[in-house]
Length: 573
Ligand SMILES: Nc1ncnc2c1ncn2[C@@H]1O[C@H](COP(=O)(O)OP(=O)(O)OP(=O)(O)O)[C@@H](O)[C@H]1O
Image 1 (cartoon, helix red, strand yellow):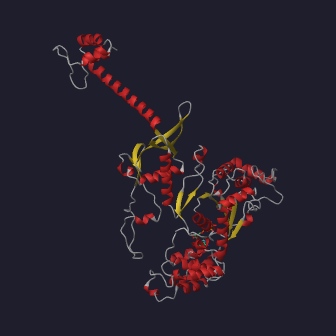
Image 2: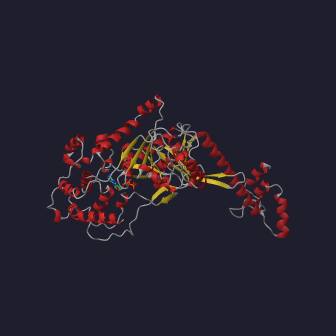
Image 3: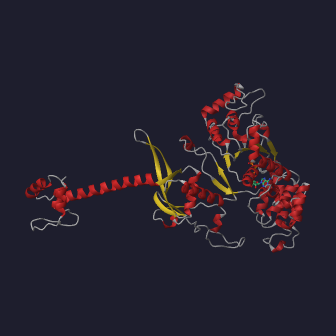
């Protein structure tokens, strides 16, 4: 290309013959002629014989070519700029950090001011929903509530693409995009979402600080909550993306609300507290003992086994990794892998272990215990092992040996707490509950009279604070001040300390008809005396009291009839 021709063509044409521009989209013919070799040779005959003016077509093509070239240039230039002058951290959407960052961003100005947002329906916690704007009526006013128009405000997140924001005097670029994995033939194998955090400069430190801040913000908003994880969906696990699903969060249950012998609760908390202490892990290491601890909570349904496990998680601020073996969603291999993917400190909760269909071995049977340090490397009973093999090949069911290998296999993560719950401890295989796998057993029974008394007082007491306690006695005794009967001397001392907190009279919400009623403690004692020791579960008592939650006097009055009804139904069954 001769640039002299181009420059001379750009000069304004003075000759009246020169056909300058016809409109702004058309490049002057003399410029096109200079840029496209042979243009005038082709254009002239076409124009003379066919009446075609190709200058417009050529001008358009040149413009598009110019734009594409400039776009590619800028793209390349910006990639080089980013590589040379910015730092980046990439976060996968399966990772917890993704949630921390997204939740933090929702509250930042970027989620208000950006012009590209994604709206999400907020699925708040039940207690959040009370802030819904609906027509408010007094409790018990008889007005029917209608939630048709109750709306939860949506939340807005930055949408896919690039978003620039400023935080603590620094500019960051937040990008949200899909990452594709394709086969060698170009077909899509998988697609997942990633976010990229970028900042200007050669250090990733500002991004790391930002991620830390997002994590702090996340835990600050969940101070009185317990995070729970369940196994990830089988498809996600198969693709190797994650073994555990995303966190769900629920309000922590104060341990004081679980009615159990105080000494038992205190001993349990002390044991766990000691186990979790960093010095203890060193001690275990020095003595060559695997740093693991297992607990078995056993007793009839509805006596508080799961409630205690959740309350313990709340006390120590630990996440719960909840596995239901009975659902048939996991194989031995899955379970083994999942145990290797546990954080250093957490609670693994295996609920209703007896209903998982694990075959209990007969006397003399042995387990083919593959990876365990204390493995009995011997093929066990024909029957059990055949049964286990059958399960393993035909369905996603855990076998006893698979479970034992997961619990104490070499890869099993140290520092975790294992809690198993069972309604029928006699059905459990001895190997499963031998010391080293289960170190402490807690028996739950039907409610004693003092426990019924405690449940009653708690039901009619003011709201319980969910603020975490700072020491064991405070955690256990926070609201256990009402209990009577089989309390220990230490319980009594605490009761004295807390006496002022005890509601001496009935709560205000009690109808006027019963305002002449005696003190709550006295009604509770009378109510507890209606029942024989250990005949009703705490869940049954709680269920009945919930139907009379506004009026303890009414509960006392109706108690005998309800008790007779339940006993009669039981006899008929
Ligand atoms: N000891 C208890 N103290 C306080 N509440 C209890 C107690 N036992 C049961 N409840 C109440 O009964 C309900 C069921 O309790 P939970 O699920 O903990 O029982 P569980 O023993 O784990 O039952 P299951 O064996 O059927 O799983 C809960 O709402 C809980 O509040």
